[in-house]
Length: 273
Image (tube, rainbow, N blue to C red; front, side, top):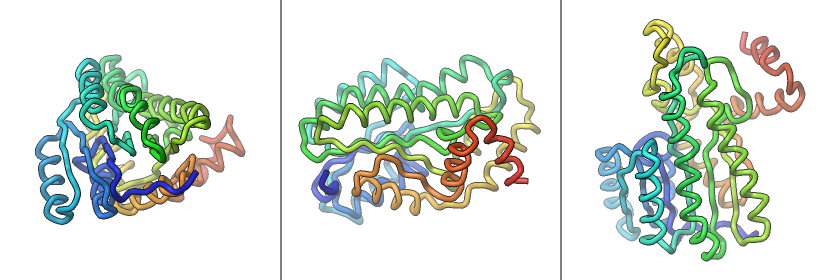
């Protein structure tokens, strides 16, 4: 496939009020893409949209406030986006949340809440917008999985499950897209400096001390800026890469999992110390 062209296209980005999603929106705006930005944080969307409008008056910026944990609401939003934005050429499913605690420490309610946002939200929006992407030659779909879509550490049963599911969904779509003029990329960020750990929901049976320790441990590993991550992602989209691994914190585990698929946690623990 030829390279993806950002200028003049229309990109829908979820999770666009902060973190990687915000950085993607800003980078896409600088590349001349018209934008539809979705997030549950209405104030954050307003801030990002206003800044983009002042810096890039030649592009259009539309905001949509939506809570992807609401399945019926997400279905309605997906149908609305497909109707109102038939000229969409890029969909980036970036929205994601975290949940602290081992599987026995989290409730099924919280597990399903995370899964609805991280997986079902992406599936629902993709289902509604895929016809538009297929109609518009040279379009692209990118789903943001995680390094925890490459390996599954303890304490991340919910998050890893959702990111492995998103990875499988994306890889199946890529195989199906061989017959279409549509690029598909699965993104696996390593340690990106976002607030996802600090904003994580805490398992019902996890003490506040345990929760804070987990957040502190994760935050120490977050060293890559969202803007650097966004640049890497968009380069991957432009080049139609099937997979994008961001940082050594994603590339190293990916290699170890391939070498020792049944014992990778033992190897990673030794390397991490």
